[in-house]
Length: 179
Image 1: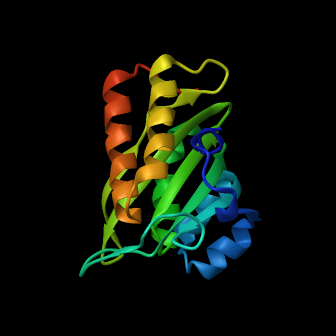
Image 2: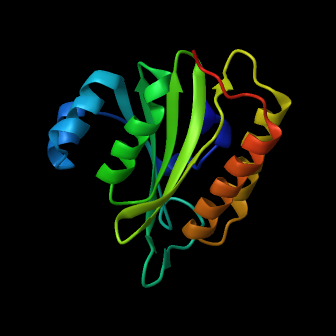
């Protein structure tokens, strides 16, 4: 729902479902993380691979950050209260920066995580958006991301902008509950 509204370039679309078993094995997850994925996640989607070959945007690198590509993933979870734990497992398992759409019972949220040397330093989670009743604040939030994805000069700038839009949306929105 959120990912569809952002209107990312078609040439970046992957559209694959990642098997949890494959995900757990290839990401070298421990038992606790494997259990979280097994119990709380229904499905993991790889939606897009954003890079300078799939869209008109430059990579970004410095001594700490490497934004050659951004993976856009979605997870369908069974328990909304476990969103943070599940998201942290996904962010830790994927080496590349990830824009993560979390879905639970018709509600969606967007999340990003900043890493330094593969360690998460900051997490940003939007408030939940009810897909059956999208608020004006949510519409504005999604429109801002869509606009910025077309004008960002590099992938790091895009990622920073999404984190900023999440913070702004959360401060202007009362949407936050998913039961």
